[in-house]
Length: 245
Image 1 (cartoon, rainbow, N blue to C red):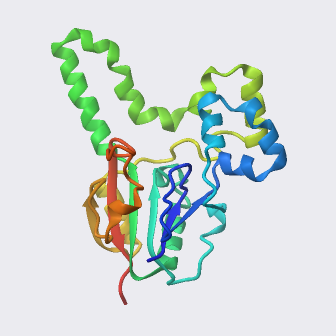
Image 2 (image 1 turned 180 degrees about the vertical axis):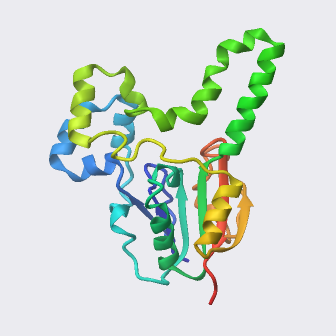
């Protein structure tokens, strides 16, 4: 079994079947001597801890340049909370590149924020506010959960940085929107299924964090935290297959 974990960030699998691939700002800093020197100057504590804890078993590669594997060579391609960061103009090209490297009958497992669930949470809470006025103080977070990642102009943690540190981060790493830290689109079970079907993927199914058509998927630990809970809450899990012929 050969599995690609695309855009893995710090969530990697140590399993020998998994090839973890990333080109996040942490990887870009880690690969550069200058980057390693300036990281403590531009990263807040949480991000600096993530940078220092970056696993070594990651293939550094910019997916804008394609997936560096031959056609029909991969059993499973997995990506979590990556698709929503890809510009709508190129998202089909990205998915077709995944289709290219998958073997016939190979599986793509996609994890994205569940737009349907976020909207249901919003509607449920606005109804609750009509009954319990004390809930109104919390309501902003339900709007934020839907649109904040799409409209912000800088990385979430950068908002509270000293202006000079924020300026240095943008100079060294580039604008947050251009470097892919913001959401370019959101998906639900219908829209994502339609997109995959359009591109020729088959047997599209909705899964959960601990179910899959991939044999022994749980053993890879990519969708769970150390306590066996979902690694990313309020996520949509969609699997599809490349046609066998």
